[in-house]
Length: 291
Image (tube, rainbow, N blue to C red; front, side, top):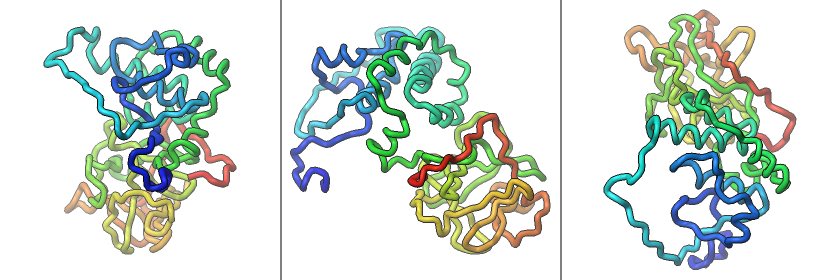
């Protein structure tokens, strides 16, 4: 409302769009590269076009007073060879490889099934990006969707496993405000993918590890980027994850409650040692506005 000067009828800029509910000038549609013909059937085309429009000089706006009729069939009139997941993963992997730059690793870590799906020939789409002089995905995060919780600079992305019991931190699918969990490491990404950021956050999606007391509990709370209860320091030598505000160390659960990690005074034993060692590490760079 601030950006629209309080006018509810004014167009509203949007980072992405729904693929079946948009209009675009025909000449501009083809100038911009139309659809990626390497994508199959359905899925991902709306995000691919959204990133491409913004990164290549266009804008996406919601016409707030428009009404669009959208008819949903009871059943899909076409098949998905190999299954719906394979088709959607194929399409999204093409999008990631062409447009997401280093941030494609977030997608692959959260959805490992897409990493090994053949994407086909993407050379023409990369050439299109070069021809149109499109901006980077970092530019998109900084200028189009700064509200996104996607970290600009981070030290690590992957699972976090305890040295003593070999289990992994896990959100368990819990909502903001609920306790962080821990369970066996399944190597399937999803709820066990965390990013350790330049801002000293340990993030999963838009939630951060948060503790308000020296003994915990450790909760998942929406990231605010202001440090405080959400500031953690990982020491690569002694492998501790220390809570900055309290000086306590993240500790594996007691035997009586195997699913809830604790905060305890640092003793540097194996129960307080954590392994951050995935195939992908991207050291934070020198951007001063990184998050």
